[in-house]
Length: 458
Image (cartoon, rainbow, N blue to C red):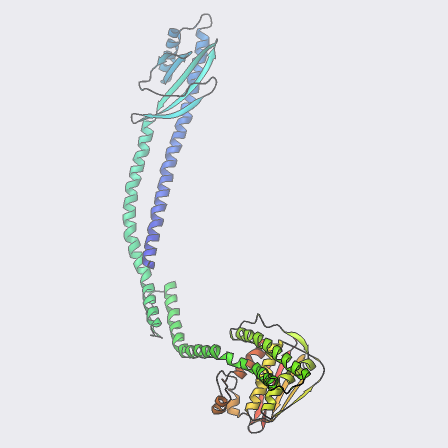
């Protein structure tokens, strides 16, 4: 449903409902107040008649027994003075009535006044009843008052209000149509412009035709359109890179497979002692479990979800020994030497991720032709620094500024030959940022590269 239709229907519903409710309340309240006032007067008149009847009966029948004729004459005198329409009974026998209509009423009760509103033949009456007892004779009093005029007046008020209501609604209908059209016209222009932008017409602007909130919205829309045009190319590139990143990051999990394949090959060749075979099997199991955990954590990092990143304190010597077992097969395959230098202490890391970073950096050093790699670790500056230094071909100053970009390769032919995806340093940098730490690269072309990883204690 269009906003024009919603606005028009909303205005009309509010007008119709508010006028109907207010009119009903006004007319109905007026009727209720009139009836209440009439009932109060009729109640007073009934009491006066009943009291007058009682006093007259007592006074005129003190020395004799009252009969129907006496009561009839007394009531006639009272009615002549009060001009009241009544029915009077003695012990359920009617002795007087000046009411022309056949009225139904409640059975009178001693010393209790009852009333009801009775309608018949398009006429409406109030009927009050009560009874008194004098010398063991029950006198029933029924007073009747016609209020047809009061009801007719209220009905005329309802008809008059209905006429006024119809006229107001007709005028409001025309006003609501015009008002809704002019109010929603700028919004329609905004909608058309939005559709145009969604179809590629970036930078489209629409004229500002009012100096109110709609005008402000139009101005903001135009500014947004300019920003969309300026940022669209960068956004498309970012989305494309992220898609490639998510699709290719799993390739980096191949690093733990180096140890698994190396030790599995040694077991397959059958040249190991029983103890070495157990150690190799243990390494394969540990690396397999780490690979499973690492894949989930890397996915969380790519998705910028740090919920599964749990840092814990690990002894530096235990970490170096584990790295030695993992890196030895690949280093031997490349005929390279890895030296380890460390001081006793502790480092606070998510070990699966930290180990992945170190393995990735050592793997990069081997791909860069290094035959000597130095891995050192020590507590420093309220944390720990882990340094990987190699004597490979190094990185030029130009490439050094871009090596952390996703898919950037310093030497594309060498990277393809080594099955690289250009994601290693990008993931490593993300992992370090997740730890609240840093990854700093210093390199000299044809001399080697030094990478410093800082892991804070917090």
